[in-house]
Amino acid sequence: MKKEDLITIAAWLYYKEGLKQEEVARRLGLSRVKVTRLLARARAEGVVRFVITRPLPGPFRLAAALRERYDLADAVVVPAAATAEATLDALGAAGAEYLAARLRPGVRVGLGWSTTVGRMAPYLRRLRPVEGCAVIELAGSFLGQTNPYSISGPLATALGCRLEALPTPVLVESPEARRALLADARIAAALAAGRSSDLAVVGVGQVGAAGTTVRTGMVSPEEMARIEEAGAVGDVLMRFFDAAGRPVRTPLDERVMAVGWEDFLQIPHRVAMAAGAGKATALKAALGGGLFHALLTDETTAAALLEDA
Image 1 (cartoon, helix red, strand yellow):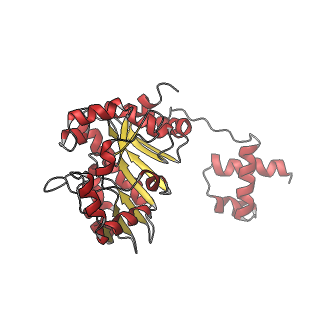
Image 2: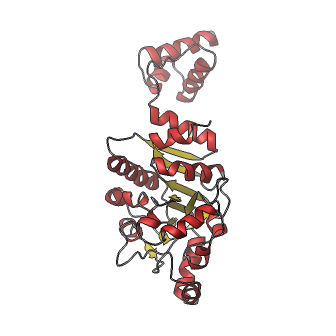
Image 3: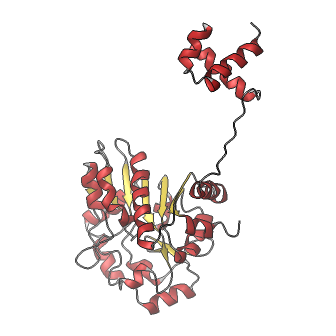
């Protein structure tokens, strides 16, 4: 039998009659490997052509466009829900799913607390224990008596792994207080652990009165106004950056308890979780400056990030 005829018959049996490759192989007296090669040639030579009659879902198209526009390894876009709260819940579920797919024995997961990252909390029960892993706090986790945005403890419990905690405020009262804390061996060890993270999942803060740092009282409106005047458009772990994603020095730097700018950029896989109209400017700068390898957001924010593309 001619090779061309064999290709056509194999394609007909597989695509038209719906036989499995093993069944096609038995029918033609060939190996499954041979059938696989014949089907590949059928596609390559145009013997078989596929027509998709429905357009790709909007979030999938936006994710693909974000990967191309910002040279990202990954992008996940969730549909915009009826309310901002429902959208953030969907993003939390997507974040937990994204994290679950990237866990492996011995992995070291660095977390920065934020309102968006905290939305993963209800979905951590979907995760399974991971042998030899660690959850590492990349910034001080104290915010008053409790921190409703931090999920480092619940994540460590869900994964059955140890927690490398940084039990300090993210912003202390003075440079002297920071120096005193850094002199504590346990605090120094916690910050060193953050530098060794394999994967970081953090939020992206916006500059202005609507940002979490102002709303929680950590930064006064006057302090934030001065930071904005210095050219900052956003922050990661209280490290501020400008419209090009470059670091902006502020007086807060001497009071921040978090991994440093260069240490953060050494983490092999850095993931941003952020959504909302107010985050678009900060996200454009962070992604354009190469601060992240992956982005999890919603379709409204994704569209805003692509407006100038």
